[in-house]
Amino acid sequence: METREAVFGRRSIRKYLDKHIELEVLQDILEGAIMAPSAVNNQPWYFLAIQSDEQMQKLRGIFKEVSEKSKAVLEERFPNNPEVISETLGFLTGLGDAKVCVLVFLLKPSADYDIIAVQSVSAAIENLCLMAYDKGIGSCWMTAPLTAGFGDILAREFAPGAGKFVAAVTLGYSAVTPQAPKRKQGRYNII
Image 1: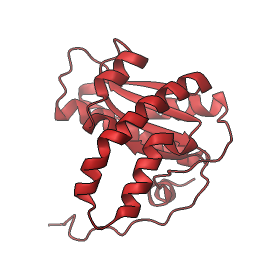
Image 2: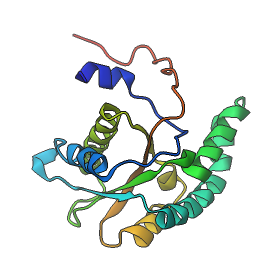
Image 3: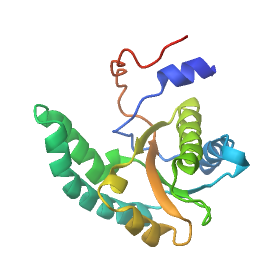
Image 4: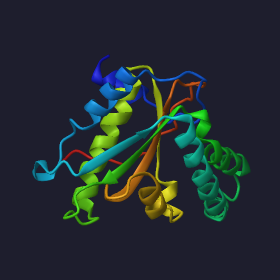
């Protein structure tokens, strides 16, 4: 797959097929993620791929609480779009039936939760999403647990000692093919 095809074709997927991701494919996606550039080559990320049914069930229990806590924020942000609110809350509750959810952390204990370190982790998350797309696997990058105040809970329950929670990324074979959202104009300039 060409890079341009991956960048322009990747979408946030919120509904997945009942099909497992092979271990070798998952490992390749994670290996691609950690090839991301990072400030002063600090590589401050830690990825935890959750795929066992038991652990995914535990994660969905936490995400149900994330969904409940996110409702008021969504209602304020999308007052005229009840369907967006409903779809988002439904996705958060069941994670779109994803077979894998990757929790991403800022690993380095010496790395403050600053913009430079988070940029490095974010570059690795984008690599993860593009690698997944290259393998025919959908993804959805989520920060709702962070904004709902569940970052510390996820870190404690799944990866104690791995650092601060940054994001979660669902992975699975897509059950839908969403259209690209319209891009906002005026977001770059050339001088």
